[in-house]
Each structure stands twice: as structure tokens, then as C-alpha cells.
Image (cartoon, rainbow, N blue to C red):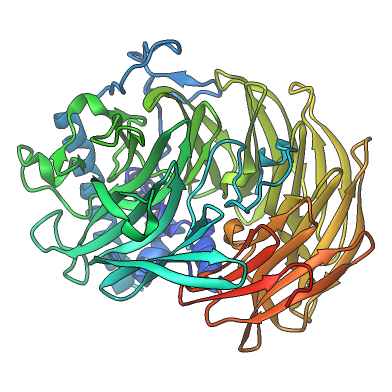
Length: 627
């Protein structure tokens, strides 16, 4: 056999071998870039005590060469149409509990296959090394602002948690330390502030708070070092994560009393509160190989310490997996137990909840020797009176990076996306019907750019793409079969945060671009014909940054009073800045020294504005004089 023929056969052999090895999503070039970008952002509210298994340089190099395995849904074939699960017979009229479609045995097999192929990938990487990587419907609420501010939310009537809450008389805060978390309750009346209650949650890390119907809900997580379960990670440590839901009666805040504590497997991801029910979502990861199939606690998540039953687990994809999304609901009026529980075998990263549906989006990196691309699996669930129902899953092209990129409008589902192919990118918008079938779409917007922010106002979608300039797109989706680009405004810099700012106005917070590294506030005027113009802008000092783009809850918005506030850092100086738009320009009304940017919030109660600095200090200002 000639050397050339041998070489060709060898190449063919390795292609076939590579096709059978799934590349971990974490090693896809776009994912590595995403992780680097996130590392460049300011710290989020939580840093894990231990990292999961490390990624070697050899494995990262191998990821660029070997072919990924595409997901196929329950029907066993890939389709552009939504794929309903065969046994999903729930109705929309009667209350019901979640019913899954898999078994412990099947789950065990899928997890084992995942780790078997992961081991093959690790071995191949070592051998290779030795031889030679915010859309919203809340704007539809035009009612007057209440007498105190509330946490900004994406969808009207779907409440979201945050690190600070108020009921107009008291301010509730949280403070995380190394081994415990403190909850502090302050009474406030004008500039008179008094700490009336403080209690500690040992070995907890508080994620968010809710304050609803005289109940304080504390969502927290912990990390327990455990070498006996789920195998051993590269550093000899695995994480057995649990999310806790603690409910306190605060009808008399000075005598706050715990009335119930619930738990679910996994690290806390997000939550929502609507129509009296709290919905909580966590991510449960199986770190290593499961030793025995009968030891179901090794690979099945639990709720309240009890292993979930088979009929509570949904398999979305026919592919090896090693993680779940655990979903629970609890009726705040009767919080004795969970109203419903469910687990989905998949690694969803983006969550969107309308007033009746839940959408979970998971990025899929498809690779071959000739082509790399990104797609997204969107799973749709119905929820009603605390009960979940799986409806269908749709596979679409592109990547959906944020919940604000998604929007449910008149029964249809719209989303904006970035489509990565090889080393190029383009963007678009797509509208699906209630069955997740494509109605209309626009592709090839902002070529070689990436979406940085999105916001929806009724039938209009606004989103920002960026590379050198800041195109602000306005797309009319009132006719879902024929969406129309109404405007494309190009500006220097970019907005990483968008929000409505009263009638026919949109505010953006981002960076000015160029070499200045300045935070920029832009006010856009929205015309009746869909036009977008920059009405005014304000540049902050050089080398300034803000958390607005990575956490929309860090921004205070008062559309009625034309106020916008957020924490900033310039050089090493931390400030909370509040601006008022007087009809012509933005004017600074507060410039408050703070200790920490990530855990600072601004809230309004009556005619007073409060800056809560990491739960340790509350600054109070009269909004008539700003003193």
C-alpha cells in the first residue's frame, strides 16, 4: 500500500472516530469566547467555591478538529417543525401535574454514554498532546408608578427576584459572607432608617429575595464537598448543589418567622412569581460516572430530599446527557409542599416565562471538519396554577444569549439570535406560532456583528448589534408572517441595556466605543412609522464601566419621573449615579460613594430615594432637594 493511500485511509478512519465523539459544548470556540467575555464582566452575585472539572489545552485544541454530535429529538429525526412529545396529553383547562416520558434505566444509559464518550475524548486529547473555546413586555404596562419602586421585570405580572426588596415601609436586604448569609430588615420613614430584624442562614449563599403577600421568600444555594457521589472531578472534589426556598411570615417584620423550607437538587438558575405561585429553576449536573444503576440517587435529582419519580422526568433529546433542569412550583398561600415538580434531561442556559408559557433555550454547537455552526433547542412548556406541561421542542439556527431576546406576543413567540458559522456571524429575528412552527423571519442583519441588547414594546422589536458601530434595529412583527425592518440607526459604540422610557422613548446604556472607554446613556425617540433617532446622549468619565448590560436589575428606571440610576466604576472609584431627563438632556442628581458595585441597588419610596450599598448601609435622599 502506498504511503498516500495509507494516509488517506488513516484520515478517513480518524474522521469516523471523531464523528462518534461529541465535543463538550464548553470547548466550542464560540462557547470559549463567551466564557472569556463573561470573565471580563464584573463579578456576578455568586462565585462557586470549587470549579468543576478543568479543561486542558490539548482538549481545547482537539475540539477544533473533531466533529460534534447533533441532537435529535423524540421522533428520532431533525425537523424545522416543533416536535410534540408522544404522551403529552395534558389539556389547558384542567389543573394537572407534570407527566414525564422516560425511565430510570434509560436515564442511566444516557448518562453513562455521556461519560463514556467524555472519557474517550479525554484520552484522545492526551494522545494528541503527546504527539505533537434584553427583550421585554413589561413596557406594555402603562399604569402609573406605585408609591414605591418594584424590581424591574421583563413581563408584566410576572415578578422577578432581586437582592433588595421593599413594601413601602420596610427595606429587605441580603448579605453573603464566606460561610453564611445575613438577612436584614430596615424600617424606613423619610430619612429615618432603623434596623428592626436580622437573622443568619448558616452555610448558605442567598441568591435572590421575593416579597409577596406579607411573605419573604429567600432563595439560596449551598456547596457541599463530597467525594462519595457522582465520581471525582479533576481536582478530587465534586459539588453536590442544593437550592433552598425558605418562606418567612413578615406580617410583623420585627418578628419575622420561618414557616416553611423546601429544597431541590442543583444550583439556582432563576425564578418567577405570578398568580400566587413561585416557580424555581435549578441546574443539576452529574459530574462523573454512576457506579450502579440501582443507586438512583447518584444520577436522579431530588426534591425535599426525596428522589424524583420516573414520571416526573422528561427526556427531550435522544443523545447522551449529564445534566437536568429541575423545576418546582409552590403555592404561597399553602406552602406546605411543592405544588408540582419536574425535571428535564438537558442543559438549558436561557429561560423566558410569559404569563402562560415557559421557554427553555439550549445552545447546540454543531461541528465537522468543514463547518462549525450554532443552533438552539427551544422547549416550550405550559404552566397553570402551579402545574407544568411539556408541549414541544423546536430546533432553530443561531444562538439566543439572553431572556430579553425572547418575547411572546398574541400567542406567537419571537426571538432575536446571532448565527455563528465558522468564524463569521450574522443576526436575525424569527417568529414561531403556538405550535412552534416558523411563521416568518429576517436573516442577515448586522453581518459580522453580535447582538448586545434587545427590548420589545408590543409589536416592535428593538435590538442592538455591534462590532465597530452600534446599529439599532427596529423590526415590526405585527404581521408575524412578514416582519419588516423599520429602522437601522448606526451610532458609535453600543448599548448593552435597553428599556422603555415612557411613551415613544427607549433608553440605552452601554459604552461609547473608541479609545475612551466611557459609559454612554442614549435616549432614542421612537416614531409612529417605526423610525428611531437618538434624541440625546450623555457620556460618563473616561475608563468607566457599569453592570447594566450583565444584570438589568442593577438599573433603576422610573419612566414616569424620567429617572435612571446605576452603579459605576471609573478607575478605582465606585459611585451610584442617578440621572434625570428634563426634556432636553440628562442631568446628574445623585453621585453617591459606594463600597461595592454588584450588590448596590437604588429604590424609591414616596418622595425619597434610597441607595442600598451591599446591605451594609442605606443612603436616603429627599427627591425634592436631592439632599
